[in-house]
Image 1 (tube, one colour):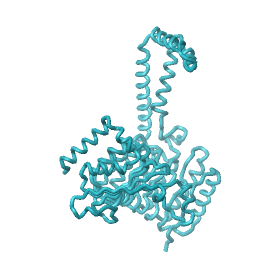
Image 2 (cartoon, rainbow, N blue to C red; image 1 turned 135 degrees about the vertical axis):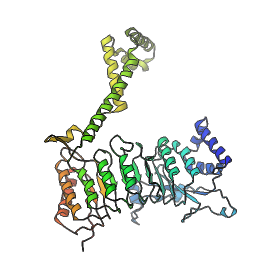
Image 3 (cartoon, rainbow, N blue to C red; image 1 turned 180 degrees about the horizontal axis):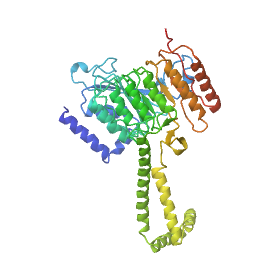
Image 4 (tube, rainbow, N blue to C red; image 1 turned 180 degrees about the vertical axis):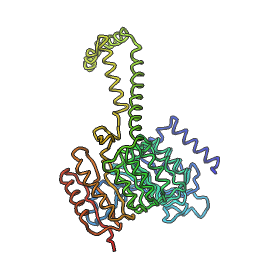
Length: 486
């Protein structure tokens, strides 16, 4: 239950954001930590909030900086010469909390937040870790501030206690900010309903160790189909959860029409050979179902119906003016340009190139309408493109999903059957790479009950090495460190 004073302060900050005081936020745009500290104090937040700054350096600079110690850390603490202090605010509810000014390692009421900056001192990530329950007021404050930081792309809440209110606030942030990556590793949700986060702006979602089950997989997979809410998702990490073959089946169904997902991590789950086959079967040629053919026609019909509606509205708005009005407007513009300086002569030349006859003006308007529609709607995206389908004995077949590039099935319950299936997938994708670009470039099956070496493994490694030589790209070889069968 929020206090009246806290609610009043929240309204004042929200009104300040929407009113004429945007310059206040703009002046302190580089000091989000100070803004967060000030807002927490203004809201009477009953927690000790500590803010730490880090700099994430690019790979080249990091390799030079860490050549001696050979560390693999992706984030490096700020060097002393930058002189970026650690901002800490302590708003205790009891007197014994006054000394709490540093982030706590264990679960306490202290809120440890980390702001990650790039080499240009631009905020790119906010991290909250090891909080027993992420407070609602903190998420509201961050939600009010993040729209003013246009380079902020990632928000991590790891090893924390969260609820549906947390997911709701994160969904609101996705609508008003540039955040495209959400990491909730080690922060399980009781209902396992992450549908609020699954929207078109989300690119990377990590739910490692979040107790995700098959029911949650059904919800997530339903948002990954073509023209669904999260069909633009590129990376999905669901490692170390409670996913079985049923959950893998849902993702296999989503991959039939999804043409954006590049990375799928299902490591450390309870998937067997049956579940792996659900995923691998859509990476090779498969027949289209009756519903998929109907949906394909419906998507095409909806696209052109919307396009024709916009086209008609545009023409209606411009064709209401008669030829005399259009000619008068062009002639008046010519008169204005004739009295201008030499700098406006190019614009006057463009006016002379405008069509003068009625048919020419009509063609000009139609061409402009076509350009506007192409910019607004783009071209039609067909998951089953005619160039990737063929008819065999009256059935329509699709060449298979060639978008998925990385698949991690390590530490499941797979066997030699999956190796044989995977070999067929790699062999088939290599045979059609000349027609369709893409396909698997990395598969991880560590920690499964597979033989140490076999003919299929050797052939797969040779095929992957051949792909690297043909394409000239830095693709990773297929890693095989499987556990031997006793």
